[in-house]
Image 1 (cartoon, rainbow, N blue to C red):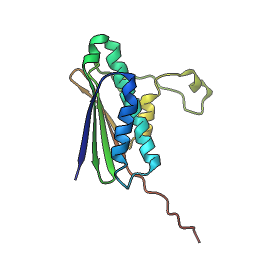
Image 2: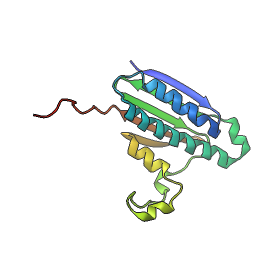
Image 3: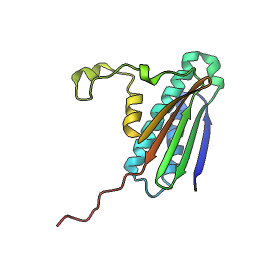
Amino acid sequence: MTELVELDLPARPDVLALARLVVAAVVATDPLFDDERIDDLRLAVSEACTNAIESHLALGGEALDTPIEVRCAIEPGRVEVAVRDHGGGFDPTALPEHPPATDPARLEFERGLGIPLIRLLSDKVDFRQEGDGTSVVMTFDHRPLPDPRPLR
């Protein structure tokens, strides 16, 4: 059985904590998701919501009247979260490449790390142009914990 939670949030930075809290609380009802995996999901949702809010703000004040939409579908062992904006959309393939995390030149990049982070934390991510905006659809599967029994 799939459980569904949907939020329409104003495109304001002060709602990020609410989006993280609601999604994490819903996912925590699935015993297959441990705290570490929920933290991955919380961070990816925060980055997707931040991008949606920035997209709205880039259009100016009138964009604040249109909410960002967060949809969380939960099945046993799997969660799909979609964050949709109405901010005009973007092409994720046109983003500049960043140096590897171990390269000192990476420190020169203060922005633009959200999408690579979302890709790293999600098991699957899809960017969809939809009408006047973009949907970021992220899938998270539970990751089995290692066997706590010592090896012999």
